Length: 175
Image (cartoon, rainbow, N blue to C red; front, side, top):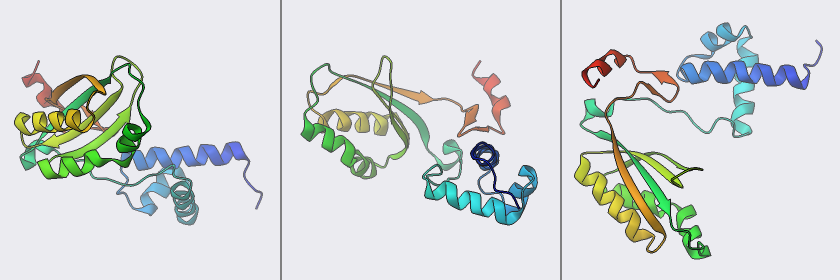
């Protein structure tokens, strides 16, 4: 059997990643069938993607509302002041995760961005009071570093983690 070229391997990896994005909980046989690969080849590619950190993990997508939570987005703009190494280390250490747990917040995503804001955190909380408490804690953890912080509540997801919301027709209630 001839070895695959680098381009072919990349195309095969993309096929498998595309299938995993659709439903990472799908069994190997189904993913293999959709990609046109053998079960062994699919399993081997998934293991290689995990080893290369192209796949960081697997998660379930859930409706926060149905478990008594609300989804929020926290947008943070830092000051133009030079960030001290101690502060950078505090951010990297993820001390914010411990604070979130104490408040009853579940952080979904956290990312550094380019644009009007510098950092975005998405999270689930019981209500806006808990979200505000989390926001205040973030400011307190980084004194003199944050210029502006904005909290937004997500009213409805149309698509989350690449997956279309099965109840997206409810959007009409908000429009």
